[in-house]
Length: 110
View 1 (cartoon, helix red, strand yellow):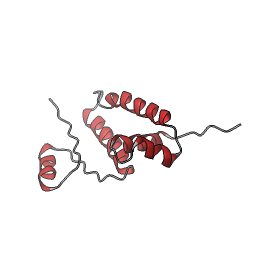
View 2: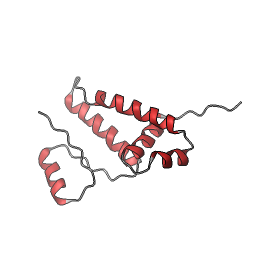
View 3: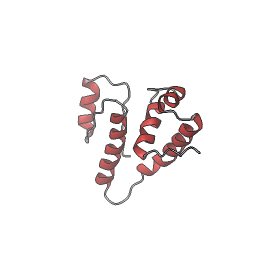
View 4: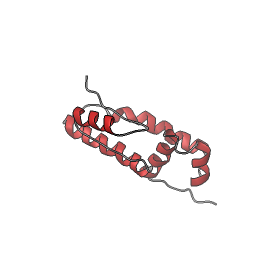
């Protein structure tokens, strides 16, 4: 009887981010990590289903935003992406105008 492998949340997030960012195809990620497509699809569904909770407001908005930024930044960094994170709109605009980005994530407060 084969023992069931256990994966950390960090590992699952890294695999999902690699697939979502198209750094790897689903098939490539499955081959590299010896996973089934169904497993990665389930992790992706869980990841996407829980993502809105990251943006719900609770106690301290600044503290929440820091936590969200750190979580997303860490996941992207672990997936070998360069991450620049700024706190203010003017700083964000300066970065956007002075550098070239493949993807930019903006948090707009209405």
